[in-house]
Amino acid sequence: MSPRVDPVLDAALDRDECFIGQIAIRRRPAGFILTHRAEEPSSALQEFHSADDARELARFNDSGKYRPLKTAPNLRHGWLLKLPDIEAIRRALDYFYPGRLAVLLRWKRKELRITPMRQTLERQSGMYRIAAKISDEQLQTVVANLCRSDGGCLRTILWKRDAAGGQASRHLPSQKYDPAVDQTGASAQFIPLLCQEACNLLVNECRKAVRPTSAG
Ligand code: SF4
Image (cartoon, rainbow, N blue to C red; front, side, top):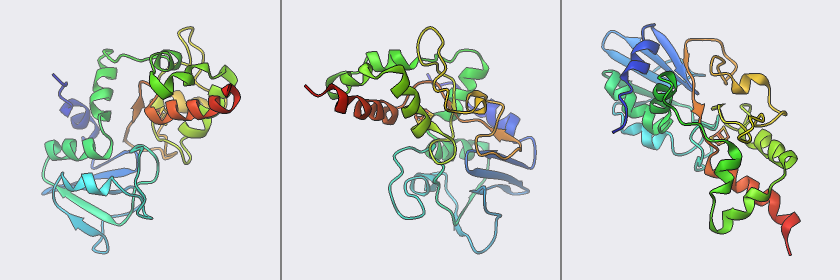
């Protein structure tokens, strides 16, 4: 059974405004308003009224391109989502940032399983099995390129490179590993987006990094 996530939102929304990734959540007398955090609520924004609308809002960037990584900092602009209560926000955020509230709650309760990168690579099969052959040096470069907060991904990395506790990438700033730091660079009331395990996109980048040197 998935854990209740309301405790996370209850705590974060005790102020009039809070942020999660690129989303601003503002409390209003009749409920809540969500927008891209770079935009203030205004009549110039296209209005939506259902948590389910978040599914489409999260799908494409400003150029209409599909967003395979929902925590990439390329959320589209120009929308305003009016929601009645915290339960509706919870549902909307699960479209914008799938699974992140549940992961955060487990982390706060010290129940979150965090998987070292090497372990994730070792369990790959088929065409991805080769990714485990990546060198430590290559791996740190690939992680820095894909996971960096400025243009890559807004999650905070919790996992280590290997079971010995090696840092995911020495090319990333220490803030990238600190859940107390807002990865957008703003200092505000925010909910961190945590990364407890390397994602499929990162595994695929490792595979691509290995393939040229392992041919034959
Ligand atoms: S591994 Fe985690 S931090 Fe890196 S791109 Fe994937 S989800 Fe983002």
